Length: 296
Picture 1 (cartoon, rainbow, N blue to C red):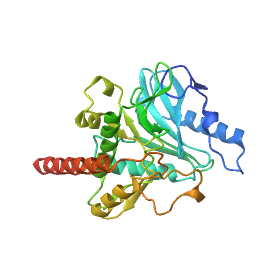
Picture 2: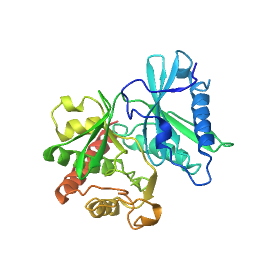
Picture 3: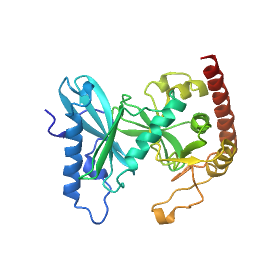
């Protein structure tokens, strides 16, 4: 019986969800909390998803972003991720991200988490989507100019990369952006939060392997796609060179530099070498994928 949100396993932030909810001035905070939890309960007990029918169900809050709150739904011994729209997120934005991730997964299935199903309640204006859950995945972020990962266990904490590791991580994130560009539709990821953290994760276990471009790329996944931008691949690469070499962080939408399209809210400055290495690697990955598609 799913009747509450629990906080018992080291999966993410060890605090309660209400601490991280973002509201608008007109919101009744208690009403928003109740409606979000009712939405989660309705989805968890829905008969529309066959995987949810067997086993005891528990829900645990693990993380948050500007767009969504992140929970893990446990059904027996299996786990799924629920991404629920923040109270301040306009209705329809979560559905757009769901659609964007589905499209990007078709382009680059190795590096994009594929959403399973979308749900909404038009009356309460609440929406969420479900994805597979990667156990204790590490969220890539930056702290005071240092790049690292947030690790859930044994206690939630941040571990920074060495300078050499940082270079590989930065180049791999750029490479994945280039690799994911949909040349048929001329669409690339925009409004990406890399420097602040949240959009890229690494699977647990990457730290037990040699820290190489190849190994990191195997473990790196995109988990957010707020916007897609329409332009030619060449222009997209040019913008990557310009935007990832600067700090683009802003507190409010009014402060945002509207000329910045891809690299939003970044506290991180990448070196030209890291960016160029990432672009070259991304192009190589695209060529390898194109050859594979031809053989198939």
